[in-house]
Length: 256
Image (tube, rainbow, N blue to C red):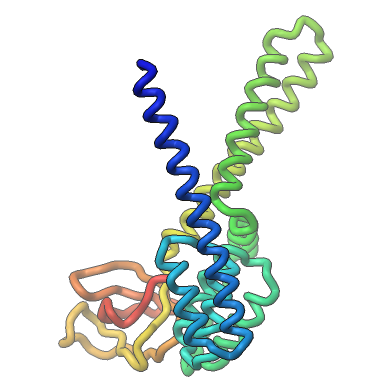
């Protein structure tokens, strides 16, 4: 690579870094501007500012939580639940998020008998969400690199003691790397490919087929959480927490 190309790449990298830093500072300033509006009781203004940040693609549990609070104050319970659920996926151990989510859920109409998850699946999901997918990926990569170092110690060290130490540490780090990788993939699946959704229309009927001629199987109200299993045209097959299934129009819900 000649010096001119190197110079262009350096300039592009510096430009990208500066733009990222400026965008982060702008989002931070806007976020605190929203806090000022919210504290003063100007919930619509706060929501507008925070949604502008959200629409840039920026994601954080704190932002989602505060958007949920603004919608809650404006009595828009379905969207409040939606953003509390999004915040929960990014920070499941946060007491404030969990508390506000439970409060919002008490205000919706539908109540279904939920099929409980197996305890090890529940804990697996919780641990996967404890850190972000990027954090788990960094742990996995770092562990694998250190694993290679200790594997080299085991293979090339002339001393038996160092071989034993290298072997067991290599085994531990390899297991840690694989475990972190599984948490990375599970976190990504839960946060970005969860297929969970919130009913956003006041009332919608679950149909037996993906068209208006299907029989009504059940009626759902806004704010209810469902799982999307399939899609046919403008219809989605959803599954309720009690295991029942039906088809609803695409525009009747919002993916978490």
